[in-house]
Picture 1 (cartoon, rainbow, N blue to C red):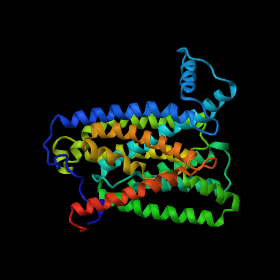
Picture 2: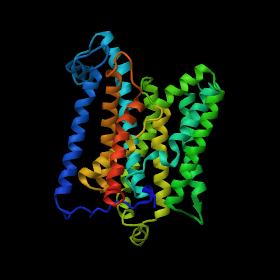
Picture 3: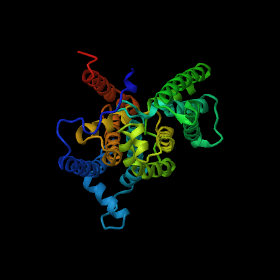
Picture 4: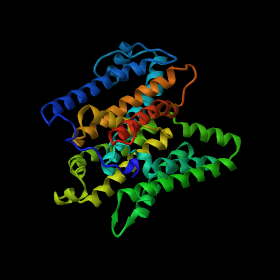
Length: 363
């Protein structure tokens, strides 16, 4: 049996029986994450090649909201509202989308090692973006790559789901294996595009695949916002049914859960969140894997906490990672996807060893 086929840990696996400590921990964590976000946003807005004191950042925000405050000089206002804040808001939306999608993915597949890329949405979006760049398609202007990535990501997920259905049902293992096969095929298609692309296109493709928020603008924020808002609003509505699904498919059906419909809806929500994020930022890996699992270890597997908290922590992690990517090697900027992979891959390896050790697979 492969790692992805292992059953999810049950909510009662801890030695300590359920008590009031879990709800208290959940509330404290949620409050802490919200406070950390409120602190990090003005700090991130003030740090950069043109530094702006945090007090001035807050004064500018108050002024824009009509709550008093003072307007800064023209350069500072332009840096904050045309460069820093679009990037910050985009980081928050993409981080929340990837974190929430990861929590849903692990709940649907019943395994803490699953992440959104398993069903092919990231590789499918990459095919659309790489194809648009390599073929020189530009009929939508600056939106061409993002639109192609979003549409191809959603189409790939629908293809994976259609191919994995049999007799009106979809088995989790079949869905995973189909996703792996489609991911491999998408990788081959991307390789072909790279082979035939010219040097300029290859450089643009490489930059997109590494992941970055350096091209953030308010129009891109508005492009992601509807998909992210819809997905983040719908996801918590299915938290209780995900908790029941964790008991197993048969018990969940006996308790009134339409398992097949639940999977269809949540796979579409996952695809919507991930495709929207990937389409404007490129491929950013490991956020959807690491974030939900950290919260699960801290406060248990209950999805009524896990789904919204994963969105909060995902936003916090990606904002912090983006701040690090543009300051660690200043004036150069590290690719965001590379940074998250460098931090996330050791955690994944540790998580894999921990899981196998619990199952007695490794000494």
